[in-house]
Image 1 (cartoon, rainbow, N blue to C red):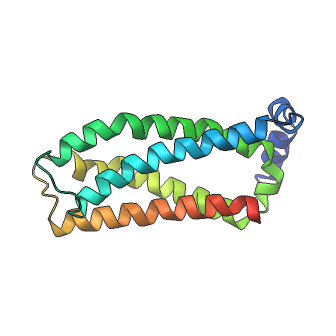
Image 2 (spheres, rainbow, N blue to C red; image 1 turned 120 degrees about the vertical axis):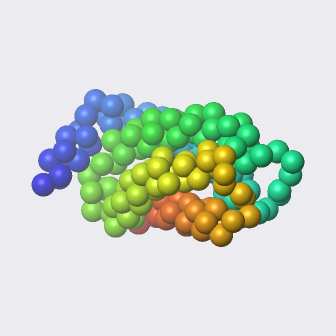
Image 3 (cartoon, rainbow, N blue to C red; image 1 turned 90 degrees about the vertical axis):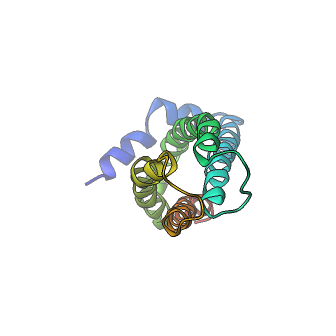
Length: 157
């Protein structure tokens, strides 16, 4: 059902421009990895605080506020470069298990991050030492690992 869309993306002008360039694919991949570092770095800082690592006088909410621009910028960069990576190899991705695994967990992780995770992070009553906070942090790390690991494996399969 989705194969015609994947074939259309693969045959688009954007895909052809990327595939016919000797540098575009590498530049897009580097941009994707740099965006990943910003996004995951911000997530890890907050999740590690939820787990009680690096507890300082700075409230969790303040740490999250300071990390948020880096996370959102990283997420925007991931979206842009991810679409370009997808378009350039769309038909191959259609048949790739790691691609579908990543996309499934990306959807789950985004929903989780912008609902449950965010509500715990910005709830004034949340204590970073609470069992709920630790569970939320562990689940966040696990979900995003289920996005990142198969994402890196896409190119190997």
